[in-house]
Length: 269
Image (cartoon, rainbow, N blue to C red; front, side, top):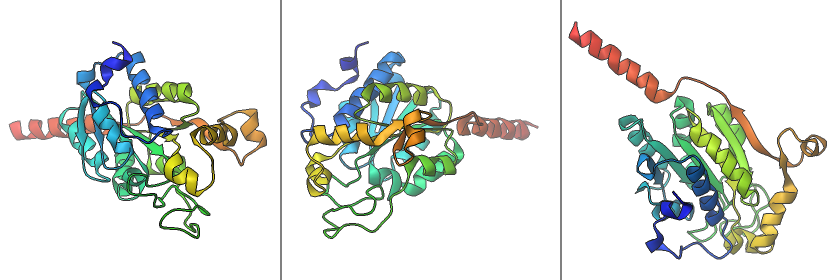
């Protein structure tokens, strides 16, 4: 099956702004699905609200375009009822870690077999450029004309602390690397978190004088380095890329099945 077979081509051209990184995230994700040779009828994608959430409309999977911040809650319900399905949950800053933050940490704590993709563009793009939990200090936004004073979440640290058993980070500049990481995340049996830095030239780039989409992508190349590399060891101010956590732990649906089986045995006595 070719990449285009995973797309609802009738919904193109897409609604993302010129230069938005989310199309590159979609590209990397579809290539991961293709290389894993997954059947599209075995995949469910749930998304919330925002620029990132539009991705579920473009893929020819079973898809749910749900409430803001509740994508993981819907995915949890689907996974518990149909554990044989592959659940993909692309989220933006707010869906993942603002209104969706509580769902995020509890999905990680439970270690339910879902792949969460945090498309981090450090801004609320669809609603006009408000700052987000991932913006960081000193950032200009429509809700922070004199810059922000809120520190950002570190997605990797938060996911790790909450108990996710696969945690990784990449960028849209490193699209092939993102594909390889997503393949491992999807194949992992447990809660997987993949943060992908994705540029928003329309709001974040303009307000913060970071240049056009090309300049913002090149910046990802300059401010990141592979985990375990000499470059990162010599310059700890760089942002690490790669896989940070990959471990085995009891998966939630499997443990839930044991409880159900135990309860049924008890009822039969």
